[in-house]
Image 1 (cartoon, helix red, strand yellow):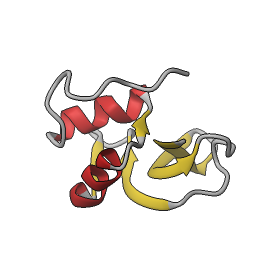
Image 2 (cartoon, helix red, strand yellow):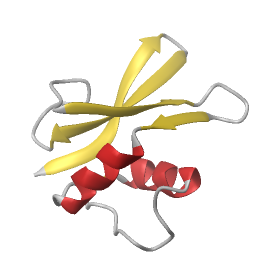
Image 3 (tube, helix red, strand yellow):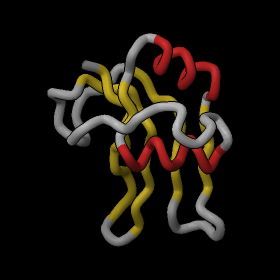
Length: 89
């Protein structure tokens, strides 16, 4: 199953995340299918950059977003509240 989730980048105590489409069996920072955006929690307010068309296309194909990615998509206005249920961990 394909999941939309975060992969951690950056150095120690300075996290930076990529939002990616990845196989659910791969490790957190392992191989991914496509980079869909970035998330920088250290900026004020937190910066989220997304490829909205690609995100929506992956969701139509059946990709399940993680809880964190689902919240980021809702805050960015890509999804309306309660439109997609988060994937079970």
